Amino acid sequence: MSSENKIVAKQVHHKDPNMSQPHAEIEIPSIDSVMLGINFKAMRDYDVLIKTIDADRSYFKNLFETNLTKAIDSASLYLYSKLLNEIVPHWYGTEWDFNGHTSIPNQGEIACGYFVSTTLKHLGFNLNRYEMAQQAGMVEARMLQPKHELKIYFNLSYEALKHKVNSVYSDGIYFVGLDNHVGYVLLKNKELYFLHSSYYDDRVMIELAEDSPCFSSNIYVFAEITNNKSLIKSWILNERLIVPNN
Image 1 (tube, rainbow, N blue to C red):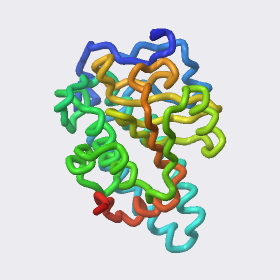
Image 2: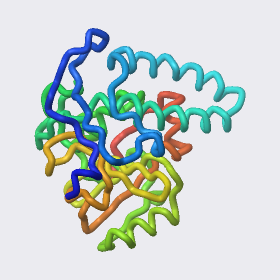
Image 3: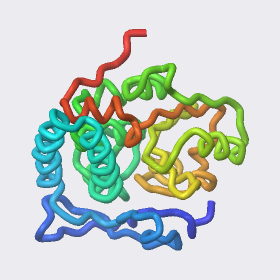
């Protein structure tokens, strides 16, 4: 795997007087963060961030009552930015462990499923992060989107998969379930980036999906997140996301 195409976090932690949690120093890769609109570094106190997101929901709820379309479109942009540029940067470099389930960035370990469920929980989705993380990827995807709306691909080369994804999706953040792994896919300018707690590199990271050993799979199950109007409505109204019965 080419290290030039990976966004990783050094295992060097320090305490910022303005942050409640220690955070990792980020290696700045050759990927153009300005072009992608990605922030790599934690910018403010994590606990304050979570509380701010919860408070901001009331604005979208009030807007939803008067202008549903504007509320969902605005919340889509809001959730994309908060997840990618504010929540996730705190998690870069957090150590992976198969049984890891920390809720505090860069303290303890985090498994792939818990990384997804915990960051979604902290983004303000009403869910049980333990229940979600313990499900198979297909079930996790169905917590976010009905099965008939998922995109499921089998036994494709990377180039074929990339073509399929670009033919049905626009730029945004997506959940992906693999054979034995889960994470987020950032689709940006027709390129796929894999954001996950890596069992290969033993840490939370983002990298080109094409270069990730963890992205190799016989099955890919995609669920929309930031472009999913039904899911965004559930976030605005604080509706519970539950494990499907069948």
